[in-house]
Amino acid sequence: MCFNKRGSIIIRCKQYFLVVLFFVALLPIKALPQTNNNFNYLHFPRSINKFNKLNPDKANLFFLPNQFKRAKTAKQRGSSNSLLDSIIFTTQNSNILNSKNVFHYNDGRLSDIYEYCSDQMGGWDKTGLEQIVYDSKGQMISILSKVWLGEWANMSLCSFGYDSCGNNTNFSIEKYSNGQWRNFYRKTCKYNSDNKVYLGIRELWTDSNWVNDTKFIQFYNSKGETDSLVWELWSNDKWVNESLILFQHDVHGRDSIITSRYWMDSVWVNSLTDFYIYDSNGNNISHLIESWDGSQWINDNKFIYTYNSDNACIYGVHENWQNEEWSYGNGDFENSIGDNFGFVSIAAEENLYYSEPTDVKDKKTEINKFRLSQNYPNPFNPSTKISFNLTSDSKVTLKVFNVLGQQVASLANGSLAKGAHVYDFNASKLNSGVYIYSLTALRSDGAVYKLSKKMVLMK
Image (cartoon, rainbow, N blue to C red; front, top):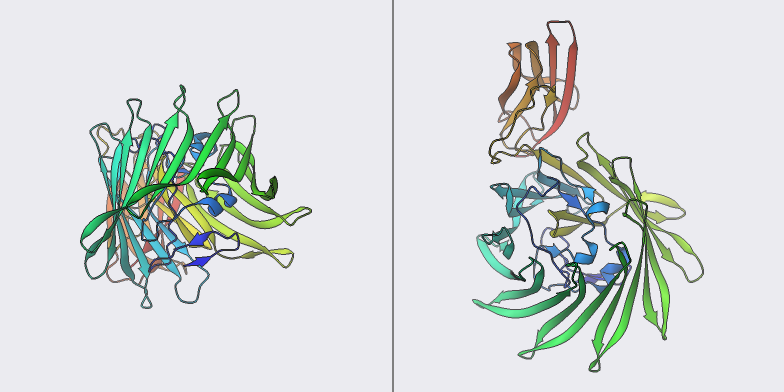
């Protein structure tokens, strides 16, 4: 256990995976893909970390408080025809370079999350697993977290309860110890007539009793946007101020500036400010954090994100402000899956990989668009599928190259009919690494189309 520079407790499991567990409200998980068929990345004020309450064991997910469930401000985590397949994190650390999360689905709904850590031989060691259970309404009712100790061993069990409107009104965590599940933590939330959470209370299991620990009160403006949050701590049998978070929104209702303050000597003192910048498609491309040095705001750290043509985030990098310049370094990447839960990893950068949904019924083929899809699965070992769509009969080549530009495979070379095509690629004789697959199509009218994508072989 250690403390970061903002004073928040960090708990690292074997794969240096930061695990944070929020005590506040959780709206129901809907079957994935969501209504907009996107995975969302939600941004949190960095000073929130100071007030997070952590599971001392390995609860491998954080649960997104309703007050931070801001769909309009979310960084897109997927596209209308893709699922988040995996994320690879690179850390600035001499002992461990990469960690990986792989996501499994059942009927389009996230069911399992596997965690891996890179070993010294370039392979992957499994470290953690989350198994998610839903009720008949598609509401998440439990998450069982396990750790790999030569076999899967129970770590924690998260359970959820809902009201008739589908609002998550209660949430609890049990720890597995000496063959038994033991109480650890619970929260209860209240909602207003607009089904927005306005109060949440967290309790800890202490000396065989539930004891108050933390409370939040949320306020909204006339547009229904979050205006402010007050966090309180239970101290000497009463609630006392702990922190204040103030929200500013742009004309589209997205969070633009979030200022965090803490309570000291009966006054609110500045702590951190988060600034969000969006592109024309509403994707968050920059998240800058400034800290208060006692007299002025100064740069602290920032995140920069890159998106593909489907508005899916494919890359994120973190930089710290040191010696009057930005430098590459580790930060807390907060990733959410769906609208309501996610995980946090300490990393300097992250790469995200997507795949076509294979269990969505009655999927329509886009026959009017020349398209090369991301291979599935990705990363892969040793086989993967590459699919593409032709808008007309064409002469096609589909080739695979290494990062040096050397051709390592030819999958297609000839005439193909209009429509969808799928090819298998077996890389059992190749080394682990990044490869590029390139599609070229020559139509009968002389038009030439070319597309290329990257894929990762991990043995």
